[in-house]
Length: 146
Image (cartoon, rainbow, N blue to C red):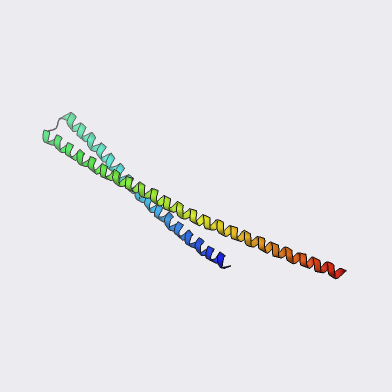
């Protein structure tokens, strides 16, 4: 019985670890979604600003205005590149957390399989004991009737 008790403790521990890993994965996914939203907002802002820039060029802008637009677009491009790196990092974190969760889940499932096998072995032993008792009872009953 100590084996199944120890196995139950391992299963509970593995379940707890798997649940915690799933929570961390969820946090990583939400964080990645947030970073992707920020990137999308930056890209949209850049497109809008570039459209204003093109309209300004079409209507004629001063050289200083042209330079200011160009410099701001460069800064936006740098911010977009930085945000893209943050998105990439967040995606790598998701992959790492997913791998961690999968590992924890495999361990939990393997302990469950071991517990099932132990129960099956115990059930076979119990069935053999029951069969032996029934055979002994039948033998005694047959001897008693003679």
